[in-house]
Length: 171
Image 1: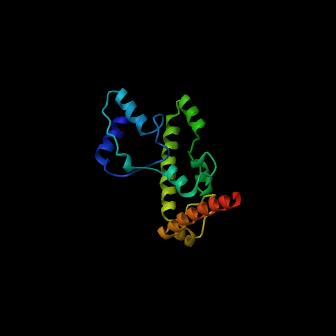
Image 2: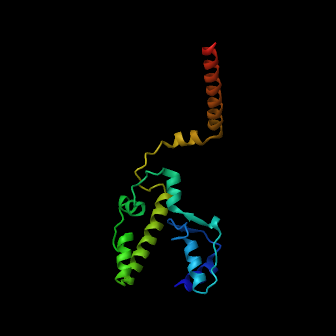
Image 3: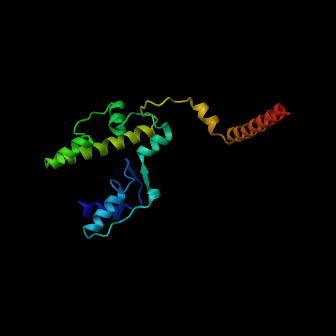
């Protein structure tokens, strides 16, 4: 399986890869690289700039409370997807112990399909979350460089006024 995976990466390594929380040495790409090395292979490593962690991106966009944990499962349910063949982490561990590899494969494929659908919904502006959304004109104004400059100037003026008030009060 890892031979096929790294052969695929060799052919498509210049593409972007969307993933869900595969950013640490225990469960991420680094774990795959390390496992392949242990088995005697030479892994094709991906450029970090080509990896998009959808889980992290959604937190950056909507904040930490956009959906309850476990986020993937709850986001799938919130957006009306079925859990057909989807296994939780505990269910996957049990399936592995029971040597139910076909169930594991189906669960993995279901998660891949769901992540792709969630990405499409996000790109289309149709992703359902529990985050409160601001009207688009508010975010446009907030993101404008002039607004940021006004905020900085206002903060500086407020700090100076505070110190001036304290100094005046003490005299």
